[in-house]
Image 1: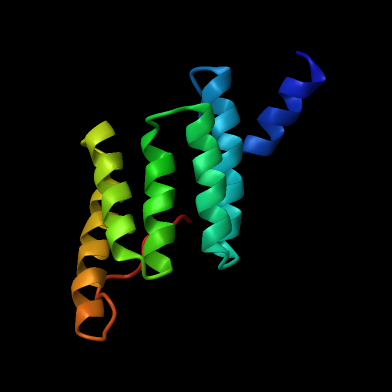
Image 2 (image 1 turned 90 degrees about the vertical axis):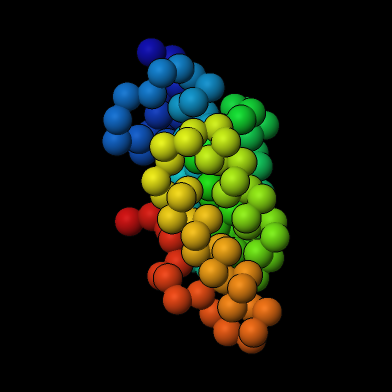
Length: 124
């Protein structure tokens, strides 16, 4: 295997097989987005997830990341829109279902000056 592909695979740190090189490259961007999200850098997380969409358009995990990152910044309309898009792409995406419920609670609570009751979504 050529060294560039090995580096991509290493950077992605995937835990299960990926179907193709495009998905692997997108996984690298999502890994970076996850790191940024955990570091509280939600704006950077959004940028990394958008880079994943540039590689693999209509990829539900990227829309999920964008949605929960927008939610963490209080941009509830954008959070909801992106999480709904993730669910349109993958109707069975349980993390996106939870994220959407959280975002809708957050939007409602924000109108009353509060926070959502559900724990914020994320990654382990």
